[in-house]
Length: 151
Image 1 (cartoon, one colour):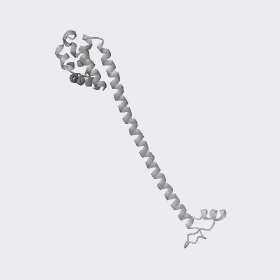
Image 2 (image 1 turned 90 degrees about the vertical axis):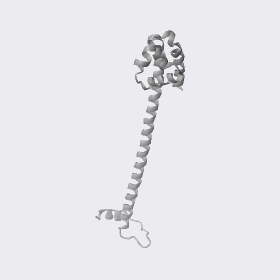
Image 3 (image 1 turned 180 degrees about the vertical axis):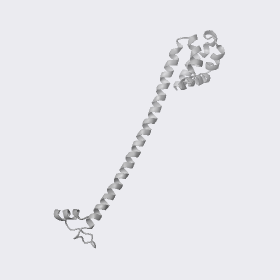
Image 4 (image 1 turned 120 degrees about the vertical axis):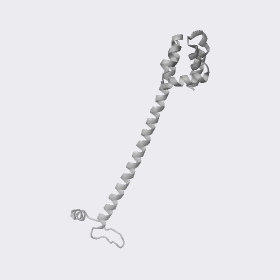
């Protein structure tokens, strides 16, 4: 939308005054003669591809107030482009953080399952457990301490 609006303005301010204001009329018509040519020229300004040598210099020499057109367009489009790039980087970082969090949660669950299976195996080794009914009798602190000392 910004490109379209500025292309229309460039066609009006530059393209329609090629004969009266600007010395190099062929270049003027080539770059700003129609809205589509102006759009292509303004796209070169967005990408910063030789915009000052070919596109803006002859226009600003013919009418110095056009520097405001080019600078305002550059500020708007460069800010927009940087905003998009920053948004993509932030979104990628957030997705990576979610993936890392999910992986950490899975590792924690796996570690806890392993710990509890080892704990169950440890308590199944103690004397006084009825393995047939899988019912454990309450353990005293002394029994627990003795069990911890067994290798």
